[in-house]
Amino acid sequence: MIIGGGAAGLAAAVSAGEYIRNNELDIEVALFEQDERVGRSILATGNGRCNVSNSRAEADAASAFYNGEFVARVLAGLRDRAGGSGEDGGAPTRFGASEPTDPVLRFFSDRGLAFREESDGRLYPAANKATSVLDVLRAAARRAGVVERCGCRVAAVEPPRALSGRFTLRMADGAFERADAVVIAVGGRALDSLSVEGARVLRTRPVLGPLKTDPTWTRELDNIRLRCKVSLFRPQRSTERRMIAPPAAGEVLFRKYGLSGIVVYDLSRFAWAGDTVELNMLGCDPSGALAYLLRRRGRLSRALRGGPITCDDMLRGLVLPQIGHVVLKRCGLAGESACSDDALGALSAMISAFPLEVQGMGDPAQCQVRRGGIDVASVSDIDLRMDGAEGLFCAGEALDVDGPCGGYNLHWAWASGLVAGRAAARFAEGEGA
Ligand SMILES: Cc1cc2nc3c(=O)[nH]c(=O)nc-3n(C[C@H](O)[C@H](O)[C@H](O)COP(=O)(O)OP(=O)(O)OC[C@H]3O[C@@H](n4cnc5c(N)ncnc54)[C@H](O)[C@@H]3O)c2cc1C
Image (cartoon, rainbow, N blue to C red; front, side, top):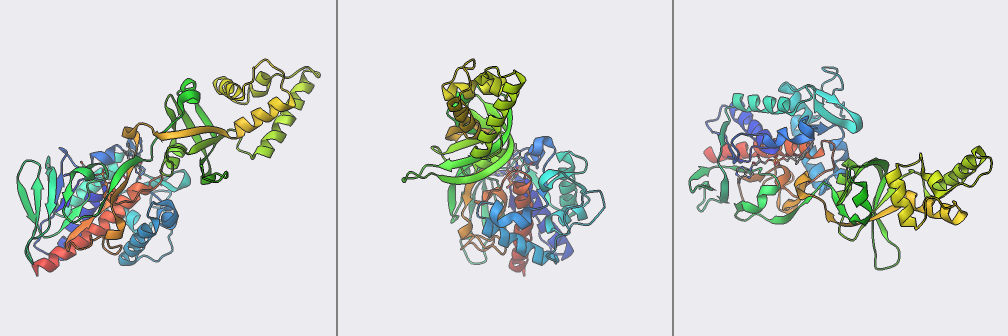
């Protein structure tokens, strides 16, 4: 029985069903989904386009994912079992141009899904619609004999009481079911309300979303976008602060409450209240910014035949007026005042390191994943079996794993689902023997 008909649960169901079908076993695979239909969470991804995976997910695994070493071992095991060469030929960038060797992409490709690759290795279905991914998965599940049980919320999983006994799944409506093997694939959000006896579950919190920062400076910039480099610092007891995330280039969206945009989402995985986000609007280091503004003042002055250059003159055409206004306010400068050397120094420092103190996550409803969940230290990196619970497996966001934007989180959901589903089917096979 697979609990959760999202990305990981569907991959697990197909993987289990196909193992059972290919080995002609008399075992049923049932997929329990609390919603009226499976796969709704998949349809919401990538703004309805589903950034299904990333061609660098496996190569980057150790550094990109939270609990990355664990993820890297699981992905390597999946590749070994799938008979991969270890040399990734990459994702097919044109339909049919090459066959992917990554086992996750291969899984989809073998079942009919064609991909297109966009920037930074982001993979989307060729049809550019999330429905295309779900259609392929559901067709594969149907062919593999998976039974969808929608509208069934599982409230508790109880382990077998006697040797060779079966798991009990208690439904929210009071009914119960018995299973030889169980895969927990309920995602991050639901884990707090599902009781799994014996599981080591860490508290979850939303990440990969907007950040709430001191609104004094962002309030009047609501809805304005800025291309810049973003970095994150943490105060230390000593005077030196520590860089938590090195500068990453991208587009920041100012909100009344703080900051949004993909580059901010990625940063949110590392941010704590009290940290400082710095926006580098010119993208060069402070000495480069100062040199640039000196040259700019000289050029503007020459064009005005030596006339006085104001602070407004310096910022006009360089940043949007609303941003310029806030920069001047923070520097305590009047726009119409002459841009003296001191003023130029202050402007240079502010636009190359515009600081905003983090107050927490912004709107949690916009966060794409949750940090926390089933402790990876209590789970086998070979088959995702939970310690001390023969026949109980887990996959996807239910585990304490998360990755950056760009298809990494779905890649983990598919990969872990494939591993856990097959392992559960093999376990059930052993139980039946
Ligand atoms: C708006 C948004 C956009 C995103 N876009 C992307 C993207 O483009 N690329 C990417 O890589 N990642 C993206 N993500 C993250 C990605 O969706 C998740 O990492 C992924 O869906 C996790 O898969 P999962 O199967 O573990 O959990 P889920 O997909 O959340 O599936 C869990 C399923 O279990 C069901 N369930 C929960 N509890 C129970 C219960 N007790 N009984 C029965 N059923 C239950 C739920 O209804 C759900 O269907 C996005 C996330 C969001 C919120």
